[in-house]
Length: 464
Image 1 (cartoon, rainbow, N blue to C red):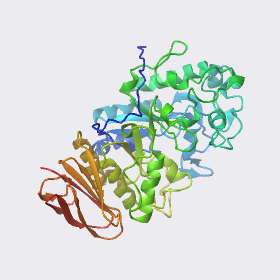
Image 2: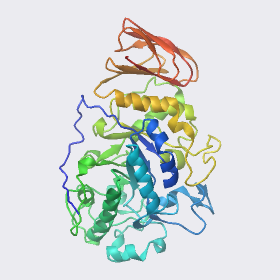
Image 3: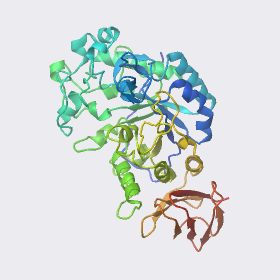
Image 4: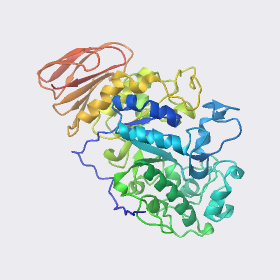
């Protein structure tokens, strides 16, 4: 096994000239065959990366794995309950099916990110495999000393990092035996071609400044040092250079979260920014909202952005009331921007505000929104605008937004449910422009972009 070390990167220092060009399709709850079968469509829609659901062994009671949400036929969150760090489960498929999916991704030059969750195990500790328990030194070595107790105060870092998130048993991620076992899994994924990871509940795994679980024999919170290749454990180290991977952590923003310290290890989720974007959609206007501010202590080039995530959609259905058109419109906004890496969450096929689970079939492809022409145009615009700085302009009512990218292009966005005019400054040279999706004509006169916009519609303009 070749080894690699990681050099600390200051992800709080923003380079104003840097432009992000990638985009992620979250193929949520699609199984490996469904992903492979749709890889050509994904690539043609302009996505540069896909994020899979968790691929490790997971809680799988008899009869589960059939429905996204059903008391008897399974639930989507079962794969967020690890029972072993081995590839394959009854939701996404087998290791062999994953390799077929990886081969398809390589064919279409799409990078694969895997959702990993070393912070906890399944609720049912008896469902955790004997192999897993033996590998970490037994059940008493698997969990933090208070890891079976549920967090009651998520702003208390001791509770947040050493107790059960949502009641899920909290793994002793500082146990070297656990780290070694987990890193072998990571390296196996890398050997298959995986080139990125999304760390679930990342803020619940401690950094150096966090409390140490001395009762479990821990001396330092070093999980992230091992996971990012800064140090080896038991002769095992991250198999390839860390900077060749796309890694971000689910560090949901709240009080007392050491965002700057986490930024030393990986990119983070811009959860507060996503909340503001959804506020904009709910009011059909950006008036009174600073939609340019990323609301994060990390530099924007290291943030993963979204209009909604699987959590905002599934848990309390916080974003499920938003229509597909609203989600699409805001996705174009965040994708047209200079920084952040936008993630598009694939909603279930047949879903609606009144039926969030849609067809309710586990493993099936999501609805057709991921390859809607406006989504595809935004993804391709993002890639084409490499090196072009952003300039965001908003109408007085807040419903019309123009994201200018230098003198090369502009995304024109109407977030309201009514038709309206655009009359805002742009960097595009004077002349006539046709939107790449609908062929709608806009004019630039003396630096002002002018035209008529349909409700909840976006337009992509590019200098010829």
